[in-house]
Length: 51
Image (cartoon, rainbow, N blue to C red):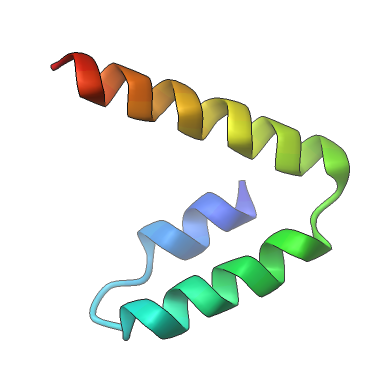
């Protein structure tokens, strides 16, 4: 959940910096949180691709 907030709140920040911060924070998440994020994101990408 925290990772999704970080990405959605990026605003006008430099995309490279945002992505770097995301990657660093993602590695600190528990395996459960990483799995949940990956599952939700894949679902959202798939749903978006169907539109």
